Length: 80
Image (cartoon, rainbow, N blue to C red):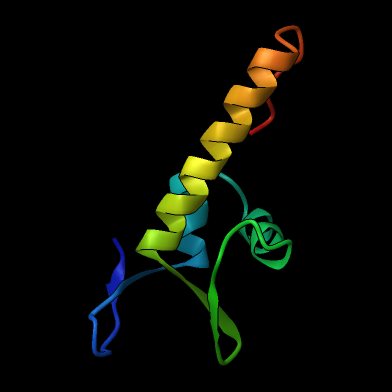
């Protein structure tokens, strides 16, 4: 599912398309989160790659936001 790129630490990376599939969102939605600084990514040429660790951190931060919203306003539907 994810790619291993050669470097000294053998970090594992996801493509934007892979993250979009995993989250069931559009490619543009993933790019939005990258450009807004919510999802850390590295630009390689014209593409972005997302480290597995950074994707995990993003998921955790989104879960925390979701929990805060549900505590504040239980009547409002959650969008993400």
